[in-house]
View 1 (tube, protein in one colour):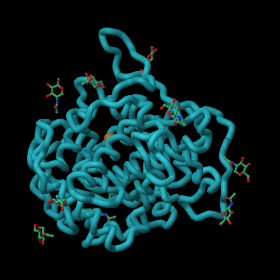
View 2 (cartoon, rainbow, N blue to C red; view 1 turned 90 degrees about the vertical axis):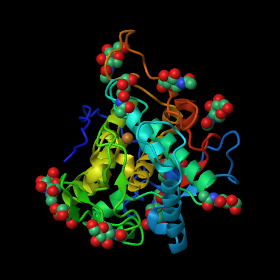
View 3 (cartoon, rainbow, N blue to C red; view 1 turned 30 degrees about the horizontal axis):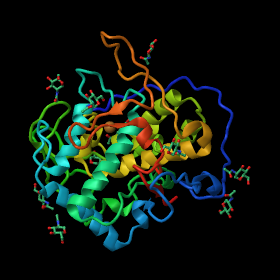
View 4 (cartoon, protein in one colour; view 1 turned 90 degrees about the horizontal axis):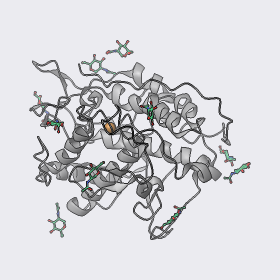
Length: 341
Ligand SMILES: *[C@@H]1O[C@H](CO)[C@@H](O)[C@H](O)[C@H]1NC(C)=O
Ligand SMILES: *[C@@H]1O[C@H](CO)[C@@H](O)[C@H](O)[C@H]1NC(C)=O
Ligand SMILES: *[C@@H]1O[C@H](CO)[C@@H](O)[C@H](O)[C@H]1NC(C)=O
Ligand SMILES: *[C@@H]1O[C@H](CO)[C@@H](O)[C@H](O)[C@H]1NC(C)=O
Ligand SMILES: *[C@@H]1O[C@H](CO)[C@@H](O)[C@H](O)[C@H]1NC(C)=O
Ligand SMILES: *[C@@H]1O[C@H](CO)[C@@H](O)[C@H](O)[C@H]1NC(C)=O
Ligand SMILES: *[C@@H]1O[C@H](CO)[C@@H](O)[C@H](O)[C@H]1NC(C)=O
Ligand SMILES: *[C@@H]1O[C@H](CO)[C@@H](O)[C@H](O)[C@H]1NC(C)=O
Ligand SMILES: *[C@@H]1O[C@H](CO)[C@@H](O)[C@H](O)[C@H]1NC(C)=O
Ligand SMILES: *[C@@H]1O[C@H](CO)[C@@H](O)[C@H](O)[C@H]1NC(C)=O
Ligand SMILES: [Cu+2]
């Protein structure tokens, strides 16, 4: 079984809480509304053009079906990149993620200051492909993992039902993969991975409640909100809140390179993006445009480079490079969305 390598927790800095907590609110609504409802419209992004990313369960049945159909559409379209292993448009994004984690350069999209920005950008580009290439009219939904962790059943959402994403794997193949045989993506063949390989193998999941209930807990995201230093914050996020959805879902979701082979990846990372945005909203003056760390995991022969807002991120042929600053504000113009809650 493949395992996602875990980022260690950075030493817990003693941070003064900036949060206005509302303990009477349901899980997932923990930050006071006067924080999460703040908007930062800039350039072309206005109250009239902003789109709303909703929690999966807030979608109507028709909207849920439209999202599933749009992902199936990307799977049916040919790749437009020539990245290794990519045969479908859906694969393009998985392949770009695999490029970003190429250990030849170190895993620069998970272990550097572009972790949150790069995945924010990837979700946006995936949403654009759904809209522009598959006539999708919605936004990418997210999975409220803290809500499910608090319920005691991390897999209570109807997203796991047969008409949507399907559930746990149930057929163990000769490679020991727990292949998914239910849902809209049942019996899919993966072309990218495992890890840095490009081979054909089954789309697998291996649900683990304990991992979801432990790492997905609201206390874990609250702990991350306490960090005011960017490097401490992303290190915290990359640990429990990030590994919860990956490790609890299991199968390809635990593959550090190829996890976007499960469409649920996009709901998980959209949730992570929401947590990042909430952290920014808690103290926007300091955090809207904050970045830190180095650009690489190991020291290049040319010496360390500090991560800056001007750093150009690479999506490996899916789109032209953009800087971190371009995606720092989700309402900055290049991006234009808000979260339902
Ligand atoms: C806290 O949540 C309750 C609803 O449970 C709401 O009536 C109240 O206005 C909220 N307070 C703040 C500060 O957001
Ligand atoms: C939110 O409300 C609390 C108490 O009502 C207040 O102390 C805080 O300054 C408000 N925050 C914002 C961003 O408006
Ligand atoms: C708005 O965009 C301008 C550049 O177009 C930038 O200088 C400014 O910091 C941005 N403000 C916010 C709140 O994003
Ligand atoms: C999107 O809509 C256009 C115009 O109706 C149509 O030509 C095209 O085939 C549709 N694309 C897909 C992938 O359904
Ligand atoms: C997936 O394949 C299994 C056999 O390995 C089969 O029992 C199942 O019906 C298939 N599921 C779908 C949705 O086609
Ligand atoms: C990783 O990068 C190296 C050096 O450019 C390249 O040889 C290798 O094929 C890459 N791995 C993948 C999975 O593309
Ligand atoms: C998921 O499937 C695996 C393999 O069949 C099993 O070990 C595990 O208990 C299942 N998880 C849940 C939460 O049902
Ligand atoms: C689930 O994860 C826990 C904690 O890592 C582990 O002890 C347990 O064996 C796992 N359960 C299954 C069914 O794999
Ligand atoms: C980042 O670079 C500095 C030198 O500028 C180096 O001292 C430090 O160890 C690097 N940090 C990490 C986490 O690699
Ligand atoms: C895109 O950015 C990467 C660094 O992330 C850089 O290596 C590459 O050359 C850039 N591509 C272009 C076309 O500027
Ligand atoms: Cu990733």
